[in-house]
Image (tube, rainbow, N blue to C red; front, side, top):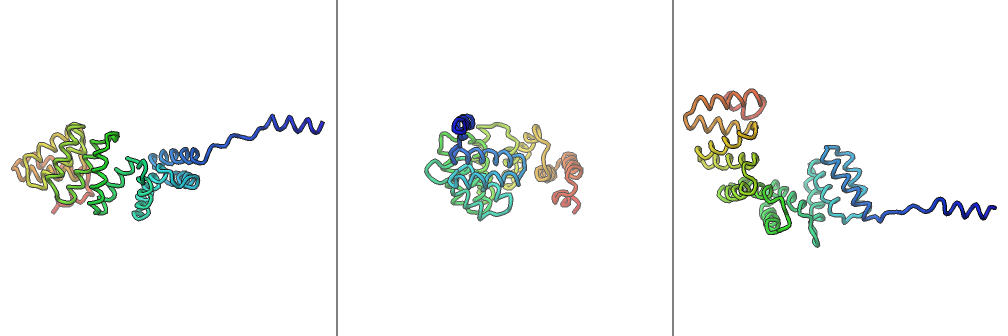
Length: 238
């Protein structure tokens, strides 16, 4: 009877199937990404650490950890994880994009442009409009207004009237003193977006320079009422 009982127990409670560590790492990395998108940083860190313990080469996990390190203001650590996420073979395109943006923020422009170029030449990467906008923003930061404008116009061909790109075009035109062009860009922008303090201040300054006191006063009023604590609103007081 004892032996029979043992046999029955073995069949009734078989060993559970254990997923390979690579698959469990992928599940944990996917969860970490979802938590990060929701702003649940602590849980995202727990899940991504699980993923990396299971598979330290998992590109998605390294990418998510890089994004977390940026939020924690740890650019050197982010750099290390980004490099693992874009390592050959099969670099992660989304990681290449965000790493290029990070390199531009840290003024490593040559490295950023190389990554941008690689993505632009990748026919499988679909987020080209956003990519071109970021390319343009990086050129703008360097004071390369012609190149910035060219990239932004290419972005608009793919995504016409995208508010972030229209705002960037207003900034680029304003920086070059092209006031009528600046007006055209922010007028298009305001058709689909309320505007932040920067674009309202650009609109105020542009209308003031063009001699339209009523329009300038209108933008100044919106700036003061919506963003009273902004640096732009404080400039109006001065």
